Amino acid sequence: MKNLIVAFAFLILSACTGGYSFTGGDTGAAKTVSVDFFPNNSNLVQPELSQKFTEALKDIFVRQTSLELKSRNGDMQFEGAITDYNVQPINAQASDLGAVAQNRLTVRVNVIFTNTTDPKKDFEKSFSRFADFDSSENLSDVESDLIDQITAELAENILNAAIGDW
Image (tube, rainbow, N blue to C red; front, side):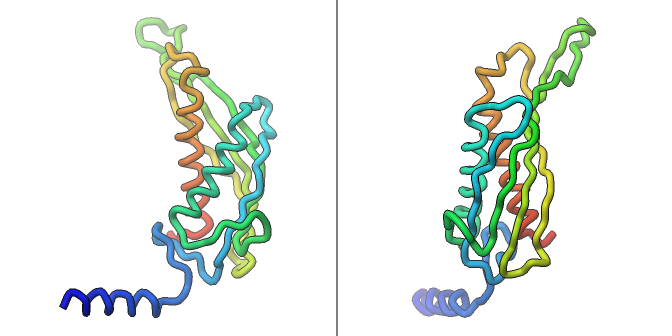
């Protein structure tokens, strides 16, 4: 009986057409994805940011879709640039109105998405994410972790915009 259930499940899954992704999104007829390097064109340049963001975007498509990563000319293509990287104070301490309790690191990227199998889904959009950190912490001590968090969130937002149907 167990073998029958497994065989039935395999038959159902192999009969499905269209692109399936673990996110619930639809990759349509696309089989491949390519992600160009995203240069950092912001006024404040963090040396690792471009590489970390580009790799995070590639990684999320490999992990959460059935798309094969190509270096160029994928069915789904992503290009763009990091347009802003900044730190701003956000909260004053109650005991001392002149002191800052938290800072906010913000990253903004401009993304050009081309879907060669369904051009109606093409877009050019700006995506922005931030992470807050305590003002008593030195940015250089927490920057790498904050960048990892922000780039993962940006990649997820871009994935949802490209293949999400909600």
